[in-house]
Image (cartoon, rainbow, N blue to C red):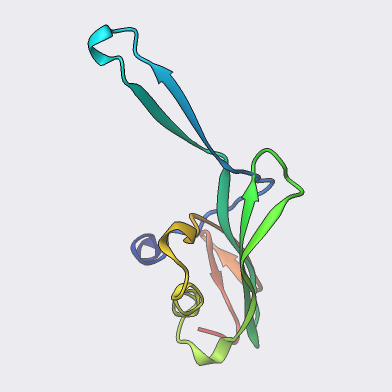
Length: 128
């Protein structure tokens, strides 16, 4: 699984996310540094959700908001990819994400995969 860290950083589990971007401003108490400073606080997450099966990989890219769990924004609709047309799950994921803008790239992924789990790795029966 070490090879996945470099090629697909989305292999993380996530649940109950929600979000938006907020800017907090503050003034320095030092008169020489009396400029306002912006601190970026991330209140949303872009998340890939999906399901991997022997016939299809189904993926969707959504934005979940931390302050409103029931609110989500679909960044890329549910897409069905034929499992057998790609040599690996990573290749299928790269195809799905190829037209996603950098600001909408996901940092988190939640994907169900049918297969036996051994040492934190899923071994599928009929797909690579």
